Image (cartoon, rainbow, N blue to C red):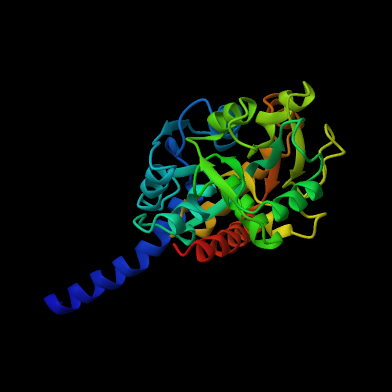
Amino acid sequence: MSSRKICLILSVAVFLVIPFSVIASEEDYPKRPIEVVLNYPPGGSLDNVMRIIQPALQAKLGVPVILTTKAGGAGALGADFVAKANPDGYTIGAFSYVALTSSPQFNKSIPYKYTDFIPLGTITADPCLLVSKPEAPWRTFEELVSYAKKNPGKLNYGSPGMGGTGFSVMELIKIAYDIDIVPVHFQGAGPAKIAILGGHVNMAIGGYGAFIPLIKAGSLTGLVLTSLNRSPIFPTIPTMAEKGLPEASLMVRNGLLVPQKCSKAVVKKLEKALLELMRDPAIISQIEKAGLIPEDLDSEATWKVLEEEFKAVNKVVKKLGI
């Protein structure tokens, strides 16, 4: 047999073996430890929920699930790391979606897009809440809008940072009602909360969970919430959807994602495992006890959330001329 024929036979053999080896590898998945990269520092809601679901995810997949943190750049450092990782299913991102839908639009130097990922599912959602002091010259959201119209540029609000979910919500409100309220940016919701309590800003917006104790104590008044439904804890606080502005119903959502080129077979296995544990009453109870709101959106539903968030934030970006 000629060397040319031998080369041809070997080439065909390799061509046939590679697809079968890939299929076999996907069927065996997972067979070694999986790294879950968190893009925000320890101690936050993302870290808390991942420590709750990590043991259950590990048990379902049958391999160690290792949590690592790559924080920095408002979540961009960890997101960029996962976007560039080998799309074999052994590197998963646990992200707050603001780093995908908002940060790249406000910071053009960020090298990734939300379409560089495939979502496995959403695990928690924390709505934003607009609050003010009880002694403010308004008691309701409508009264605030009326007051702001009469006093353009004279009011300010504490923002958790430019490009954050709370900032985008407030800017969408300003666009919809044609009011001028000046943002005062802080390094997170915590400092913004301190500022409103100290009377240094007229109002503040941030994660709903952080304000619950203060509203219960009467230190703050809740004006409007960005969840789709009213809170069972504070049923008198209206939602942005009720006000006819569903696009401003942005929430601080956390979820798991893999690099965009990850195979469908691996994505399905991970999505199934995540959905099963997120619908487990024991897991749900633990998440709620931690002060978080569980949300079991699948991959397709999460795609829609990411697309809607991107479009809403883009409206703000265009208005600001960024």
